[in-house]
Image 1 (spheres, rainbow, N blue to C red):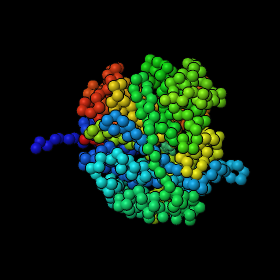
Image 2 (cartoon, helix red, strand yellow):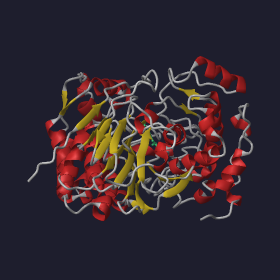
Image 3 (cartoon, helix red, strand yellow):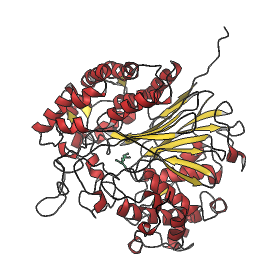
Image 4 (cartoon, rainbow, N blue to C red):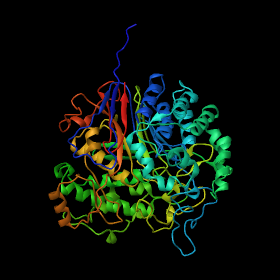
Length: 595
Ligand code: DON
């Protein structure tokens, strides 16, 4: 039998956390492969995913193995103590999504984070750190649902858990970035004995090159390997979580764990210049805001404006301003609040919202209120990873424990770091959360409810309806602006996905009324035009999110030569033609690996 030669393409982009690359012109190494690809924030996790694909697993199987591995090798965001969204496109072109967002414990109440003086509680007891900051995790429930409904049936659950368990038990070498990141969070991590012991070694801090072993987490994963999600929600792990919560005034009980339910939801579908966009529906706001902004931008000649121009940044800012004002008013868990998602993504509504934008003057956010979406007729520390398998099945998954290292609490005896997703509720409606986001009454805290998210796992199709690219990001509300600009970079400016992800970007979220630029991300003369229009810049110049993605490219496109206009428009056929390009943001670690 002829042995097929398969090359392994690896692109590892080592820690540039906190530093924006000088320009988009420095093309980081993108990975190319013929058959299948995994792009995630850690090379070990990506390799584990590729191994599953090579064994005959499909994209969903591989995504689960990647997600479990990231819980071990990317502890600031990868998790089984958090939740997220898995968007799936099947080879037949149909799409679905698994919502495994955390749920508030039953005892949660609207004012649980407000003290007697009406002030937001800080520290332990508040919505950002400590035992009360966690929602009931959804990750294992979501992964199990995805496995049962959409897995290939060719690999066993235990085979997806084992690689993560082995890495937890045997350990892995810490990069400079991760060793430093533990220390960056030492003030809060050290308050929780298990986190202090595992991640800070009780003050003998890890250095780059040392090995991190997580035996407690390995034991938890061994139980999950054997008994599935049932262990986490009804078994030994559930008992350990409930006991530690009880001992520390947390709210999550055995009943809360037992009652957690992942939900399968229809993805949102929109269209930008003839390309179908498949993205996440509420309880994430990501898809709605993405489609709203793209709908508004469609009315402008963005190609003529140019990718790095003041004109583009101005229009992005004004469209973000309007969509984020709507987000604050309308968006929440649709199982609890009336969320007019279809109306918000209606092209006619975008027309209305767009009509007040001036081409050469910034509006003040104080004068931009939410739009009248209800009047429209009923219309028809996070990490993102992507998998495309040999049959063209695509997974675009974003999951998180919210802030880096979540609530900083590691549950005793489990090695499981818990989320602080309760801060994604409006802890006090009208008061900004850790991302400065204003959230409204609809997103108030209620038992059993899912907090509003900005996660935006997205899949974009070619004009003839085939898979083109999948992307998503970490970075709270900046996820939405990043994904918007990435989609636009590809469609309006003919960039390949690596170029689109690397390119400098901006962010605006209505309030605070400030335009966020990246370090070296904008020329001084562009900035001065925007200031002349009346835009106020945020003082600190930080990265706007960090993304990963996979694109099917036709041979004419390469990492070094963007396709000529139009060449990207029709795109390749669903399978067979072209190569897969795996893209990692130079703003963070990661590896795209394919075969
Ligand atoms: O769901 C959300 O929108 C947030 N919890 C995401 C947090 C995040 O992206 C943190 N990443 N750096």
